[in-house]
Image (cartoon, rainbow, N blue to C red; front, side):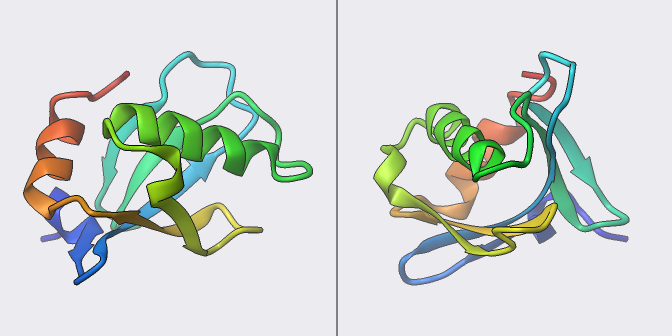
Length: 106
């Protein structure tokens, strides 16, 4: 069975998160939780997926949630897809999981 920890891979640079992004959301919830079927974290943004707006909102809000500077977060794969791989430089897997598990439905 897949677990929350499976959506984060630690590397020398930091951690890579598997994220499924739902853009154009009407909900105020940013981080919904973990989807074991997709093996990804589920995030909602209110911005539409046009001209990079949804990606921009995701990166800004993720930086705030993880308490890290925006310049330490980058999209590695999935810039034009709902499924993304996000690199968070300088953070450890345990710290990210602790922050995310304590912030469900934020």
